Image (tube, rainbow, N blue to C red; front, side, top):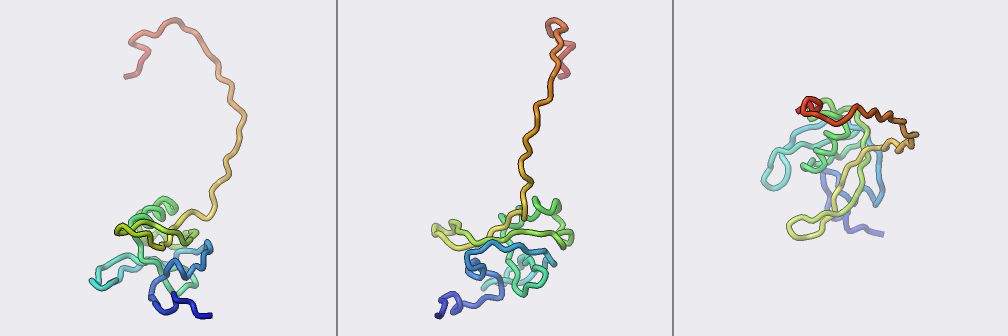
Length: 131
């Protein structure tokens, strides 16, 4: 059965390419390429073993910086990410997009409260306040 998205091929990864699934990928490299009608230079992130990359927007770039711990694109190589299709508002319309999140979030650990000893040394004076 034909898929209408196949009628609009792209050199870059589109939300429809993910077929509604979250995919774990490993960053291979970031290249700066002329993109779109205006041939504007944009960062494109490529993944190990994948042909198509994602043209980075500010939202996804910030998320990769958060996950990788670096704003230096050369340092992103080897970073694992989870990419997933979703929607966003753009130009007053709802459009498909790809977003990025960490592969795994550490589980919240429940810890026992640490006992705190309360010592009453009398009323505070201005010398007791450090600022």
